[in-house]
Amino acid sequence: MRTLFSRPARRNNFIRPKNTSRFAEPGKRGAWRFLPLDKTLAIITASFVVFGLVFTYSSSAFDSTSFFKRQLVFDIIGLIAAFVLWQFYDRLQKIKLFRPIYLIYGTWVLLVIVLFTKPIANVHRWIDLGFFNLQPSEIAKVTLLIYVADYLSTVQGKLSKNWGLLVRPLFVTGVTLGLILVAKDIGTPFLMACVVGAMLFVSGARLKQLGAVCLAVLPIVLHQLFFVKYRRDRILSFLHPESDPGNNGYQLIRSFTAVGSGGWLGKGLGNSELKLEYLPAAHTDFIFSIICEEIGLIGATLVVVFFCALLTRGISLARVARNNFNSLLIFGLTLTISGQAFFNMAMAIGLLPTKGIAMPFFSYGGSSVIMTLAMMGIIMNMTASDSAPKTQSGPDYTQFKTRNR
Image (cartoon, rainbow, N blue to C red; front, side, top):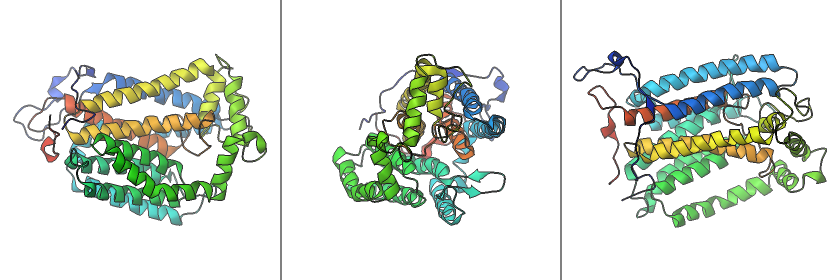
């Protein structure tokens, strides 16, 4: 059965190390080979990291050096995690502790622990480790996608005929997103529900099946949006921000001012006026507004183009992946990163209600930056594993069922 990712394509966009002695030799067990690097993903990632640091420094009004230094540390940790995952994720999968179901169990433990932590800004989203505030919902994005991709890789092509096969991934998704929702975070569950739905669709689920799931969760969505006061106020202020300019509409109006005042070319790096305590969360949730103010419409458009390039490259790589698991995981991770970016940018320009969701690579924050780079590392590993020649010491691809060509 053919699926969305069943059209073959050429693969010639990789950088292979010149030192061939680092590759595994045929017949030699346990030898390590250096996996090739996808040039497009590497350029996009490096560009985002550099510009993310620039705008972390630029968008911080009075504490630029402190935020910049901490963000630099987070980026270094994230790049190390990306490198390790790029080279070894296919091998980590063989370790029992890294099996998808155990990753989900560990995530649930963290999501429960965070509910009993001291609230920050009236929400329970971070576990204070002393030197670092861990945000379990960022980890949940990755582990949930790994689990769903692993499960769907074994049932792809059967979902449309057997409704019962949807129960397990929907249950795990529901529990994971439900725990995040209890911590007063509706943005992440909404984003991940869309991504999981897309993964189900490309795996063969019918629209009527997905529609039935949407109808089943609709009462919960309506309750969270319209019967929780502060969320209802946000929606009303999103529709008419001028009706409450000093309270619920304040952030959106200031964001509009920042975006509009940038014009075509912007005011120049570091010359934002709205970051001077006029626009709350300028270095986190509303960093795209500062980008528009400082480098203008043309510069902000380039940022959008780079995220579109990431989305396009990820989907094209998913279409030619060697097996179902790689295909679905690349697709899910790419869609999560780019979807979160578009969500944040849409919020900043008033296309969506204001919500505390970070802009990948750009917004200040440790967990977000590290896990985003970790996701890029996994994507690069899946891509490199697909392109590299198989050797006796290479990853075991027979553990996943492949689709019928």
